[in-house]
Each structure stands twice: as C-alpha cells, then as structure tokens.
Length: 346
Image (cartoon, rainbow, N blue to C red; front, side, top):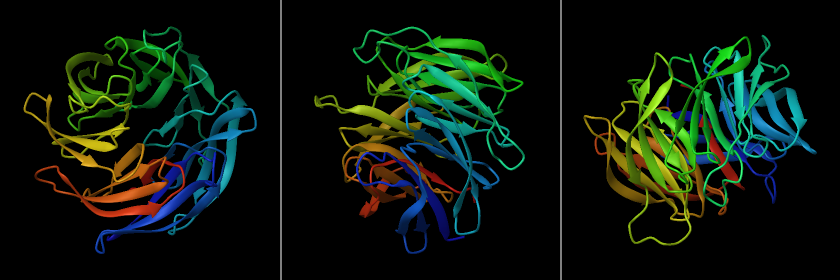
C-alpha cells in the first residue's frame, strides 16, 4: 500500500470546522486532500478502533462535553455520526479505545474526571462512568487535577491516566465498565506529565512532561500495574529560555527511537533507546511552524507527520529507520487549528 488515510482533530475557535481527513502518498512523498470529514465543535483529539470501523472524537455541545462516535463508512474514510454522550462541563482533551472496541476512555483537563464509555455492537457509545482525581502541585498551573491522557497498557489489563495537575500517573483496572484505582506514581513535583507511550517489550514506558519539558523513562510491572522512575532527560537545549511546553511522545514500533514534541521551541526531539532502555539525545528537528501539538508515525513508519496548531499547518518528514533522524519533505500544508493526528491501521 502506498496511500494512507489520516485524520486531524482540531480546535474550532477560528476557521476550523471539526475533524479533517487527509491522504499520505508514500510513493510521491506527499500530503494532500485535506478536507472536512465531520463538522464538530472542538474535536481536539480523536482515536480509531483497531478494525478501522469507528472513529471517536472528543466534542463540545454547548455547555456540555463528551465523546462522539462515528462509523468509518467507506474505503475513502468518510465519517457517519452514530451518537454522542455528553455531560455538563468542558470537553475532554484525550480519548482512547481498546483493541476490541468495547471500552472508550477519555481524560478531562478541566473537570478532574476520567470517563469510561462502554460501546454497543455498532460502536456507538453508552453513558459514561467516571472516576475523579483530587490534589494539586507546586506550579501555578497545578491548582487542581488536569488529566491529559487516558489509554491502555499494552496487554489492556489496565487503563493509565496521566495527570498534569497533580504530577501523577494512575493505573486503573476496568471492572464492568467502571474504573478501579490500582496504583499511583508520583513524578517529580512541578513536572506536569502529559502523555505516555509504551515500549514494544511492554516493560518500559516513556512520558512527556509539559511543564518541565522532559522525557521520563519508567519501568513498568505488568503484574500489578506499577511504574518506577528510571530516567529524566530534557527535551530542550540548555540555553533555551523562552516559553516551551512539552506535547506528544511516540516510539517507533521496533522500540529503537523515542520522539518528543516541543511547543515553543517548535521542534521534535529525537532519542535513541539504549540497552538499558534509558535514552540518549540525537537531534532536534524544526517543525517548520508554531506550536507542534502532535505528530504521528505513518503505518509504514517511513514518515512522520506533525501538526502546528498556531500556524494551522501539517508537515511531512521522512524518517531514517536506522538513524531515527527526520528530514523535511513537505511543509505549510493548510490544516486549520490542527491538534491531533491519527492514521487508519494498515
């Protein structure tokens, strides 16, 4: 396959209309076909079921927030709305689904809640159950919990919730559609953990911090869902003093490279994974735009696509699978208020 369909979650504060789709042609090394796939208010994060049957987007409906379910209706990636489940308060900022498409989980930055939505046979959503976080941290932005990620451990026994506001990474066990707390790791005070990605060996994970601009390497115990801190490493140059906030973190599927986004420094930091699963810095790659909120490896992993939220662009980089380094191929592809990027599974 040489063409892959991708989706863009966005803010809709300016000119964006909702969820967009695009095409990556790996033979031509080109992004094209950016167009509205679904009109929706503030669908900043999306996720796709492993069978490519459904897309789930966080959404805002008036003074309520929640998740909207879509059917991926054809081989062109068209989206057909199924239903929405919303509750009073702001929309979530992150959404994930398990590989069997049975339970959607969402993290809410504003309401202190992680929500779990059981699905119906067509992928539509049932009303959520929730768990609420408490606490704060030393940074001015840590006045209360700010949940920024909810996703699954590799074996899907647990749900992991990353809380920027309380410097915690909490493991939950899904129980009949609800979430039971299992373990809590407290990271460095004021670090503001944001997103997590697991190594393919399932024994290590890599966290991006938003406030301290670091990658945290964690050892993970699959039996009890417990994390242990292994390494902290900066994502910024030592002499960089301007505002920058960590964004996304992703790994190559061979587990050899970690990529971390810097909003402000406007770069992707590239790291090599060493034999002990700590990382060493390789290089920074300029994202050719402002505020790179997210990036994604395409299914072939020959390329990385990055989203520049403030510039309203997506950018294509070719990836060297041996060195891990990135080379700019195409920039300034218009994608208004682009936040999240996801590809259909190949």
